[in-house]
Image (cartoon, rainbow, N blue to C red):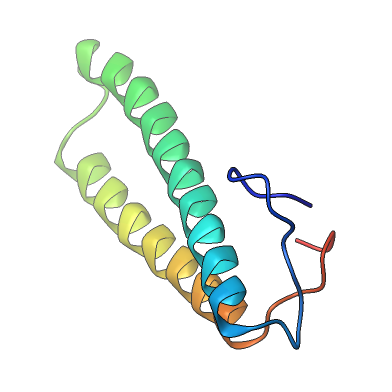
Length: 90
């Protein structure tokens, strides 16, 4: 699999510079995924707020969901840095 710069992603035993490049690519991909999920949820909840079906309890649930999602993504990214997967398995 290639990254945006066009270079090959690499697996275990790869020189440290390439591991960092892959890690940065993975972090970018995770960030885009989080932004997309948060955006979709915000759009849905915006519609609920307009019809007064979204209040403090729902907002607090969203805050909890956001931070739990951020923690999960961070954990996965750190795990990928510790134990990079071979090419094509991400």
